[in-house]
Image (cartoon, rainbow, N blue to C red; front, side):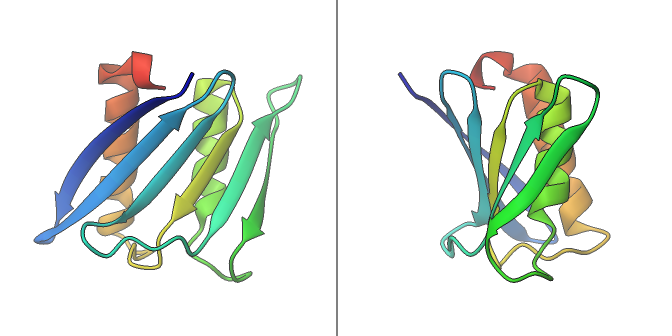
Length: 115
């Protein structure tokens, strides 16, 4: 069974969708600008036996939007594999990215059943 969840965050007058697909032992999270969703990048992060979390990018340019770093933090927090896609419409800046990350981590606290 899959469980889906949709959250939105508005940053600088732009709405971003955060789509979560909860699977048995892992998560797929997509983040993209509302009405402009594109699947440009995919990263995966997996916790190891120790505190270490391994992450890599599967799809996308080498200098992409940093999806593997966020996937790594999420996998560490959730203690399960996380597949993460950040659309090209999500800027890697000091305002938008931290706001989106805060929304995701707040959603984890407030909707734990979805993660």
